[in-house]
Structures are given as C-alpha cells and as structure tokens.
Image 1: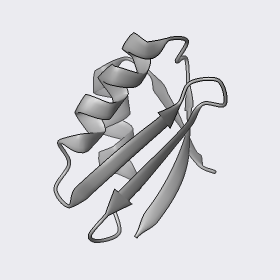
Image 2 (image 1 turned 120 degrees about the vertical axis):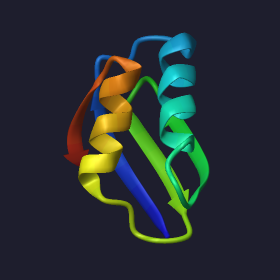
Image 3 (image 1 turned 30 degrees about the vertical axis):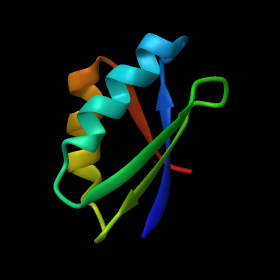
Image 4 (image 1 turned 90 degrees about the horizontal axis):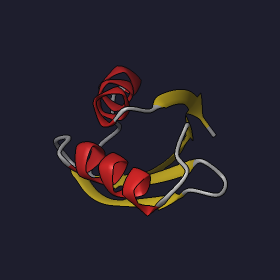
Length: 69
C-alpha cells in the first residue's frame, strides 16, 4: 500500500533523513521517499498505517504532518 503525506518544515537532506528514520521505524513500513522541495513523504507499507502513528513519527523527527496528500 502506498500513501503520500504532506509534511511542513523540511528544508534539507538532514530533514529528509530524520523523517525517513522515524517513519521507517513504524511496523509494516517497507520504504519511505521524501521530497523536501514539495513536502511530500511517500510511504510504502504492508498495511494501512494509522495517521496518528505517522503524525507521532513526524513529530518525533521535529516536523508537522499536515495530512494525506
């Protein structure tokens, strides 16, 4: 399953790495692709992820989840 989220506050590769690390740690996540310039984070997972879980992971990285793109 592939879902794209909008994340606010990312400005560089370090930002992308932090978000990738936190979201990748969620159960069922197989791949995370971050496009800093658009704020889009595309997640491939084995099952649907709870938005609250993704929000918590993005918050832990220091950014704000705006919602599903």
